[in-house]
Length: 379
Image (cartoon, rainbow, N blue to C red; front, side):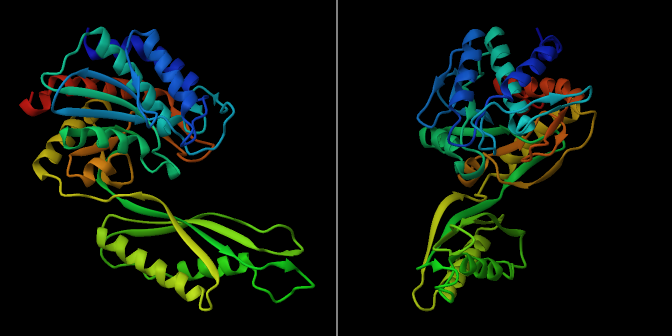
């Protein structure tokens, strides 16, 4: 059967699979429950899979080089270890992480089943479907790093199913992430008034960082995403910490922001105050990718997106995704998704039900293209 026939048959199955998978908790670093569910579902549909040291669930077709990778990540940004809530109406399905990235995960699961049942064989080399770990938050692209550690430049192309149908990410935004900690003597708020308060010192650092003059070239951002500290309303805080990141498409801007952070922290501790800074995450930026190879991969994907998204031209832009690792190594990579929705990284996230069918059609065709490599032949 053709992929379009398969997609029509599987439309309702895919909705039910999404309803099942979106409830399973999968915070970065603790994707075990969802990984187990993915592997179990694949086994029930006669799709053999393996799980690697990073927790990725893999399905490989063919053997040898080159290797074409298509992945969707299992983790979500939310820390919940209990079942995630799902609600729905006639037009939408709502759940934390239902679009980013559960909807795309389900599409890739269905594609693995179709490839197995249709006995698809790569024209050459290997097609590797990866249900990955560590894409969100402080996961630090753990799953993708493991794949690239094993395969390296044997990988010819990488497609990440992440995000929605509106556009593709074709450039990598690099980032550095830090835990900045302040420790002080502390004491009683009345009896020891005047001692340095760790929270106040941390607030001073934050205020200075938010006055950073950004580089003119390229787009650079920064953010304090979490602050913690203190003991009680009547205690001078002995400890406070924050998570801080900056991002940019340009490697030189990342270096500038790193030096700026060092200057701010040095100025905040003129008398040797106890301020520590630990880098807890790093996503590499854009590498030297062959422009022609990158364009061929992009056009292959955009052609399919136009076909299954009502002829709407997707936008192209930079982002921080699983593609960062291959792009940093000079390997062509693009990222896009198979649904329409809003509210990513919020508990109010939803997907539009009527977008799931065209998204499934798109996902199946993208995977089939990896086997036939028709994009190189101009069809």
